[in-house]
Amino acid sequence: MTLLSGPAQLFTVIALVSLPTVMYGGYALLGLLRKRKLTDQQRSFFRAGHAHAGVLLVLALISLQLLAQGDLGEAARWIACFLLLFGILGQAGGLFLNLLPGRGGLAHGVTTGGAVFLAAAMLMTAWGIAVA
Image (cartoon, rainbow, N blue to C red):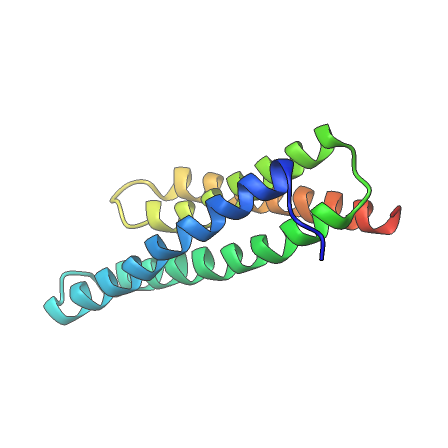
């Protein structure tokens, strides 16, 4: 069994510690839904942001294992880990930004940036596995 080290270890810990925040987000969403505090559009964006955060954190845990086993250099692994983290924050965070009035353009930009970061992280991970 290969133990994690370096950036893969650090970012695995960050992802695992982040999961309870997503769990709390689900609890908070249920409370807001019961109290009918959200509009239909806000409810849709909250659900989408919450779902993306959870799924992308699980993707991160898998990707970090692959990065650790791949053949990228140390600097490239750090870059891929940061791209993964900021990609998740951008994708989920951009959806949550839509909850604020008048932030549609900013939210779209943040979500798009997150997608670009995630795509770059996935391509770097794939390259590391392909050359291993």
